[in-house]
Image (cartoon, rainbow, N blue to C red; front, top):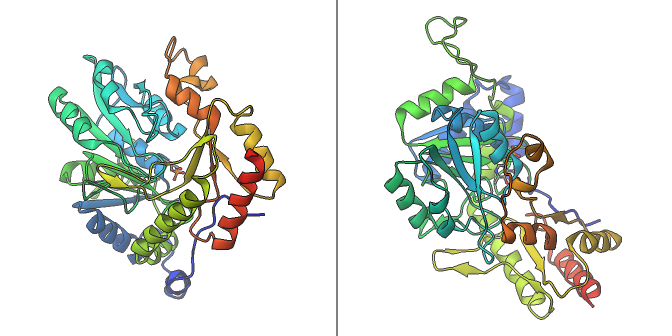
Amino acid sequence: MIPVNEPLLNGNEKKYLGECITSGWISSEGQFVRKLEEEFARRVGRVHGIAVCNGSVALQAALASLDIGPGDEVILPAFTIISCAAGIVQAGATPVVVDSDPLTWNIDVGQIEEKVTERTKAIMVVHIYGLPVDMTPALSLADHYGLKVIEDAAEMIGQTYKGLPCGSFGDVSTFSFYPNKLVTTGEGGMILTDDDKLAERCRSLRNLCFQPQKRFVHEELGWNFRMSNVQAALGVAQLERLDEFISKKKRMGRLYTEALSEIPGMQLPLPQTPYAENIYWVYGLVLDDEIPFDAEEAMNRFAAHQIGTRPFFWPMHEQPVFKRMGLFNNVSCPVAERIARRGFYIPSGLALTDEQIARVVQALKDIMS
Ligand SMILES: Cc1ncc(COP(=O)(O)O)c(C=O)c1O
């Protein structure tokens, strides 16, 4: 079986994990946590890094740090992971979705302004699959309407927009270190900001809002979102290889695109936009409407070839859980709805070999013929 993703853990991971064991520092108090926070923030050009236990809670803490709650609306893409809308709903705020750009699959920035109301408090910008969101118009809209920007750069570690690092644009920016990400800690995440107060708030929210002076007296409720030293040790080793990982992903994307361009009937990821080269966090495909089967059938056929795939995200406004809550009535996002049904991604992990890529290409030729 070719897995849809497999991480590469053959750098200093074992060495640093060994240091955790021999020193006995395995909790969040260990040195690797601080080191990962500092080095990750430096890499993205931000002042503060706050390590957390995954990318979903990073969004929760970001929302809470910006005081987003009941009565507030947050604009986000329809086409994204549930963590984004779940965080907003769990904060008591209302998610307002925007359709996708048909070529990049990112939020269609041109459609954001029509969703702004008096209640809009923030835009949650989410970079999807390999290309960043067109940030310049998104940021000027936020500036014009006085909105906060939460930048979800979970999938975009090491990517840039107009040469500036993804994760450097949000009032608060968040990342995930799940094993399919460009830097992994097994489970983990990071919050970045330049604002001292927001950073302090996120640190406190991450750590149950213990108070420095009166530890067990609480003025506010937080969560235990801490990352352990063991996880951070992995992250420090992974971050050392980020440039190499980005090159590997770009090469994978190039090999797939060269081989798949000749197969008719599907849309491939754009190799670049005017503001970024694709880093192929995952290599997605969208079947043309003329193809007589959908993504689900294509994925079944891949499974018969012993090849793992994943469906594209299912749009937020079509989630049964939100429908039952009475959210997104009469909302339609035709592009997101279409790519959710016609799109899936093929093996894209860092450990993927050229032989495996060739097998995936051959299987796709069989499936499409
Ligand atoms: C865009 C985006 N945001 C948030 C998350 C959530 O991260 P985690 O799985 O670490 O909770 C993911 C995870 O894949 C993601 O792709």
